[in-house]
Length: 63
Image (cartoon, rainbow, N blue to C red; front, side):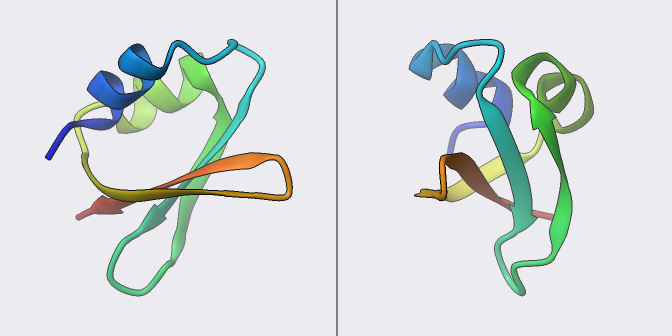
């Protein structure tokens, strides 16, 4: 499993792409925002899966 930082670095998204972070087990909203802010707050969390919904890149993480 990659971390949020590794995933976002590999994807090379625009700094203005809205990213949403949710827990993988119950899909609780943990936070979101633009890439630099998400990297700062959630960069070390492990990614379980991803999705795109209504123009938002959603990352499901293991807590």
